[in-house]
Image 1: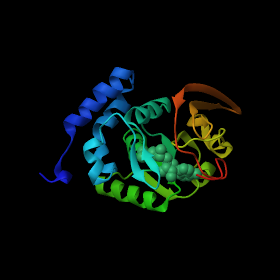
Image 2: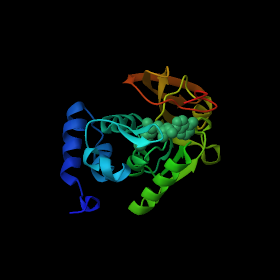
Image 3: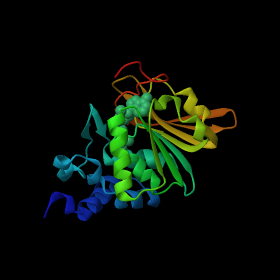
Amino acid sequence: MPESDIDYGSERRAMVEDQLERRGIQDSRVLDAMLTVPRHVFVAQHTQPAAYADSALPIGHGQTISQPYIVAFMTEAAQISPGDKVLEIGTGSGYGAAVASQIAGEVFTIERHSKLAQQARERFDELGYENLHVVEGDGSQGWPEEAPYDAIIVTAAAPELPQPLVEQLTDGGRLVVPVGTRHSQKLVRAERSGDQIQRTPLTAVRFVPLVGEHGWQRQ
Ligand code: SAM
């Protein structure tokens, strides 16, 4: 059977049971989304057999598709509901945005590498995911034209909460972002309530740097 015809359904079910449910992911919408989105479509053909492994994988340009557990953890932390407007910074392969799109009303995602943005757009078209919008640019500045967002997920590490993203949250909106040094970070959920921001540290993580005006100056 050609590699492209393999459905990987049993690998996907095993990923959800062994890597997500067993480690405490509980939101049934997140679990269903991870069961639905074909992760192997978001990696290069030669790495497809490893797509459901418990690890991040290279996607070119020195970037990675995050470990399945981290994608699930961040999506759950963002507390996305049907109808929500979501912004993701760091499209990468497009997988995380695709997972969010199974739950949210609309997902906007920004990637600084034009080739990755284009590839993700092609994957969304191929899969018929119509509520996803990709743009190339510096996501540390957000996407003000479409703001405000119910949830913003940043999949690259920032030195501090990027202020434009905080400002683009709805009242009650959640920002999930790795904050720390270039080499190690804490995943933080920041919830906006009026002018107040409540920060909750979640778990230790390690992401590639957010490169931009409100991130790091270089990769
Ligand atoms: N969500 C991705 C996925 O599911 O494949 C994983 C993303 S990868 C860990 C982080 C991505 O953030 C990289 O593709 C990188 O190019 C991108 N990135 C870094 N700084 C950025 C910025 N300022 N704006 C947009 N994208 C950025």
